[in-house]
Image 1: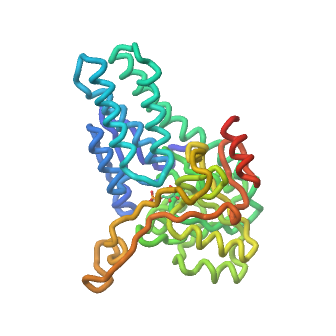
Image 2 (image 1 turned 180 degrees about the vertical axis):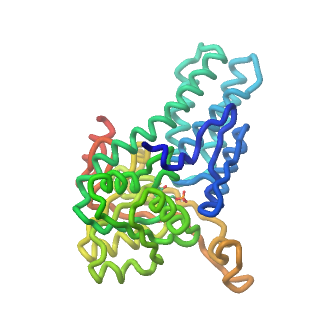
Length: 349
Ligand code: MRU
């Protein structure tokens, strides 16, 4: 079933094949990475993006790295692997899934102090593959839970791209929409274009069209107008990092959408796997916000639109305070307020 989506990352023999999202929807081109550095570069340059997909890419980068460390000395292997873990973890700062995946793989080395190198390599590669496979299973479960918040015929607004391309497959927010659509083909979606990187215009609309889900592209600044005219029934978006109290970082502009939804009494849901939750952060104030090249703001599709020398600011994410969030759809159910309590319980489930 998920095959009709676009797995953005998979093994191709000994290489990691990454669907280059920078050239979508016009070209479907794969980058074949045979070194962890190539995967790190693909993450940094947004060839692969979306917090869960970046987590999976990090895991596969470490699998490639573990296999290629050349030494007979277990101590040296551990040191080199730790160094690589740090490099991978720092590829992008905001999404929690990357650090989560790196932690899991590094703990293999810590928890098996006596294991020979060959065994560690096998454990790391197997676990990385587990992270890839589990992500799809988790999204399918999230979709089933999420269906319950989607009323018949709902006109759903989504932001950025939280689809198959942002995960190992199927998607989080779009996974929920897809699951709901299977039961109710009358629902429809508004996708915000999502300046400056245009994930909504390029990727979300592309995915929804492929799935046959009615989709309408709108500019980001049309959201308030549509809501005030009663054209939106529900908002479902993904997340990059969720603090212990439910404050949620997602693509820049999400906060704006959440406040507008609150103002118009429209339910606003986050769909995210538990690997996006950062229990170490009591609230959203500590979430690191990636600052990207201002050139992404001063130009569009590589063409300069602002005067030469214009100043620009390009925070890639913002934080939506939990107050504006109606619920968090996870693979273990839809979490409601008080999130501090329901999140804690969900992490123990
Ligand atoms: O900068 P991006 O494209 O990686 O940002 C992606 C988002 O903000 C997504 O909404 C989020 O990662 C959730 S994807 C399931």
